[in-house]
Length: 285
Length: 284
Image 1 (tube, rainbow over the protein chains, first blue to last red):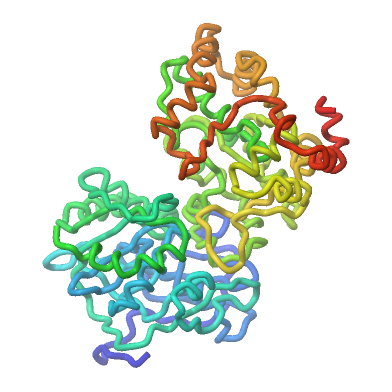
Image 2: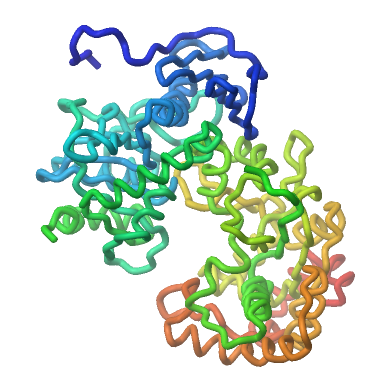
């Protein structure tokens, strides 16, 4: 993807190098994450790579695998992106975002609830992808919260790919067997920050054929956003819990349209509902 | 981040269709002193389903959906002290996995974080009938799956379920994993004994949980959770874990229903597959 910004120095430098098994000065840790007294964060994915994330602007990757091994990039563009956001004062939500018929929409929810599938469905109807899986939000931007688009690719499972009839791209993992693919999304990609309009919290396991929507506001919206903060445990290890909660409250109060969206169970049913879902998601309220 | 007392977890474990939900409802009601039960409000209360993918992802800062089932299993022993207990002093986890160790040798349900283990078991002939109804498969298929030591759910390699992959093992394998292989000393409660005398079953469960319950609360709970009442609430649309369509979760609530539902050949197959464990549990 070509660089479209100005000629300022890089915001984040990513390079290979040694990452110690034990981060010196570790003050808080979980089984995969260590944080030290300088707020450096070490993240280890067994048999894939160890990552050292510091200052919100540097990532060191220690891996025995070749540079282009997709597994290494997968966790870099996932968890590590989340850690960088926390260190940079941005709010990462577990959400996929599209721009569709003039509205910027985020689909939030845990894995397996259909975020990427919903985005893929709308892409078929002319939407543009802004982010997949991790939505980076600058809550305190001048003029209100904005979404910082990430990259034009999607992580999609075989069942979604088959149901939507899209081209898969390469496997996301090389070191283990997983029918999950890195799907490059064609078309122009605009990385400029955009105003976020709507957030849909996806609710799993709706046993009806028709989707259902319910508005969420006030404290419930704060809680809902908080539940969707990406890499939230790590934000706590970095000592940022209060700020994260404040950001969620600010986002909930920013006048966005926030809805809980119960989708029919099953990717096939969802694929068939695409045509009616689109208009429903952007209908004026 | 970690809790003062790691022994904050109770495993409410069973093979599916063995009274787990019924016991959960009983414990919720008992904890509230036997007050009238509202099934519509029970979901996130007692008997929280452990294998929800987002609990592991949130605890460990990783997307388990980017990991293979084997990689996920290796992480499962490490989540309990990080999981969000939402202010509960102890959490009763509903579990259908068999008890096992990872290839690292760590127990998926470690004794060090265990307050108590309740293991519920039911005559596999009745399980087969209920299993077929619940999962919409033929009884023969249910019997086949119940004999499969490798039986796993939410474990497809081509799609992502919001549950984690779970290894059920066979019915016999499940029972012996919890009763013999685990180091948890489970309190064993038979479904048939729950049907015959729910008060005694509740007393045994509450003793294991170290709950101090009055006899009045036990009796009130038994009355509030009678099968007819649960079924009436489900029919009134108040059971959030219902099966959808016109199939009822609270189907018969009896022991020995297999006698009018299984063929002689089906009965013989189950008894052949599981005879040893059935005999041990008093089913043969």
